[in-house]
Image (cartoon, rainbow, N blue to C red; front, side, top):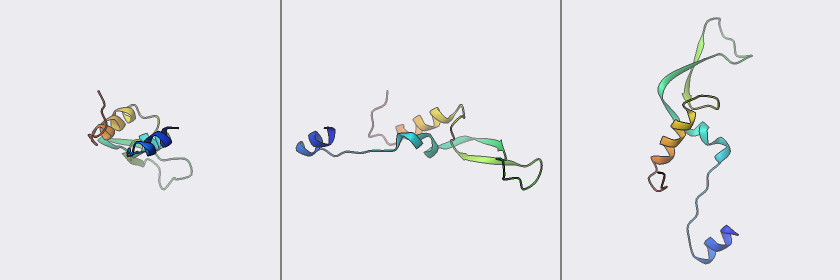
Length: 76
């Protein structure tokens, strides 16, 4: 229904995948995690996390900053 209304009114539409939204934002601070199971390349080594992942406390904030940086979308 929304697509039909947009087509009749000649509106532009945008979409994004909300399910993987948190996975597309960069982290500002350095974050490290233990190696995932089956990925052991040595004991005592950790992985540096470059993008937000589910379960991180800062993931929602990182996604908010990413979304707000586009400027077209009004976010209070």
